[in-house]
Image 1 (cartoon, rainbow, N blue to C red):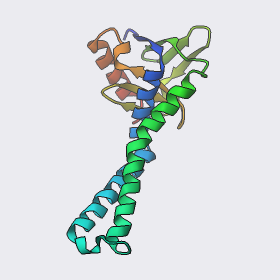
Image 2 (image 1 turned 45 degrees about the vertical axis):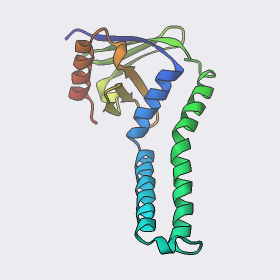
Image 3 (image 1 turned 90 degrees about the vertical axis):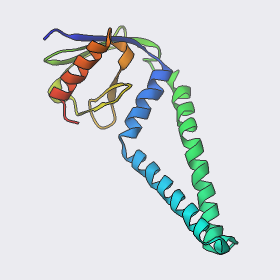
Image 4 (image 1 turned 180 degrees about the vertical axis):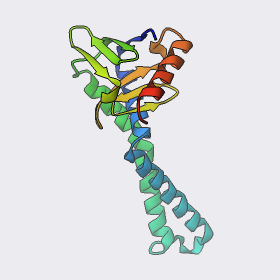
Length: 170
């Protein structure tokens, strides 16, 4: 099979998307779902027993917890994205051109003047396939992000996705 190539510039916006995909597939996402569930349960409990809505009843505690959870949920994503963008400028690979070639043997990553690596499929720890692109982990905390629009065509992206599915555990 011929190699499939992806070319793009590693920007802060791509970094935010890559981290979002990574977080959707992490333990933190499960915690976020648990907080949303608790928030919904507290609001339902308050709605069922409005007489407990005063301070000291379940409603008083429930409203405080619901408000705290809502603030955390409303600010966590924007705060994370702000932090990623702020730190991105200090990265040595900020705004670097990226070239990735996927083949039967594995992947080749080239960031001219910064890094170059060849990795066999066996060394790829796990893969996350999303509608936005492919996330290939080299260990639990490091990944290569291949955005969908880095490929020359939708057919190339589909072929890359099939190649990753065939060679990497998910």
